[in-house]
Length: 229
Image 1: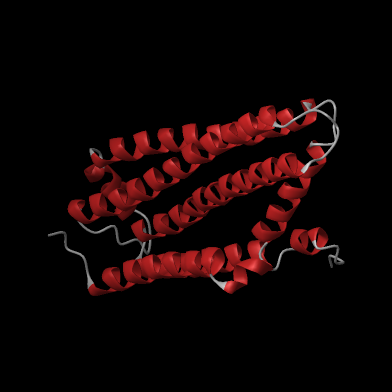
Image 2: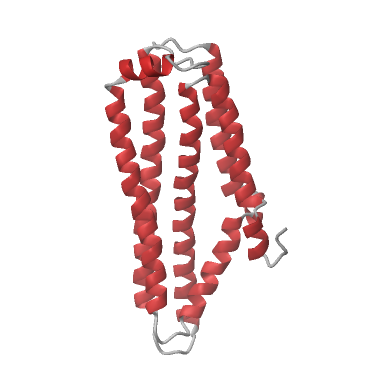
């Protein structure tokens, strides 16, 4: 077993609990109704209802393509990051020598270093699956857009189709947000290579940033038609 110290176990436990706890709070609790994601979900449904009234839907298809491109960019970037991390497993001795030359750094043994790299590989793999699924969901939205009738008269059936498209788009946005969240927590995990206490501090910082941006940001106030300070 790698020479993991008790403070390392504590730091990793805090990290995993924080990520899981925040995900439950932001995505599944009653507080989700106050998040920026929920507000954007409402705008997505409104977008699709307005789409039914347009004779020319080039703008709508362009928006969907833009959303797909964003997901594809992050998915491809994540694959590159995974490749670099896997390569880093074979260069653990050199990496430890570099880190050991820095002040206040406790890189640990080669086995402990590899374990930390494996954590980042798992996080990046999770992010890739989220971004790839987002891309596919947005392609479903494009198909629903093509299936929407073009008779300029909103019927009950066309409205239901538009609402389905809005919900699928919102689901894709939710998975994309989880992929971005994984990136934030990957940055926190980088601090573990330096010191477990810094790992804990970075996890707290990431939680603070995520909570502010999803629940207390100025953009959320604007979207709710409130005055941003």
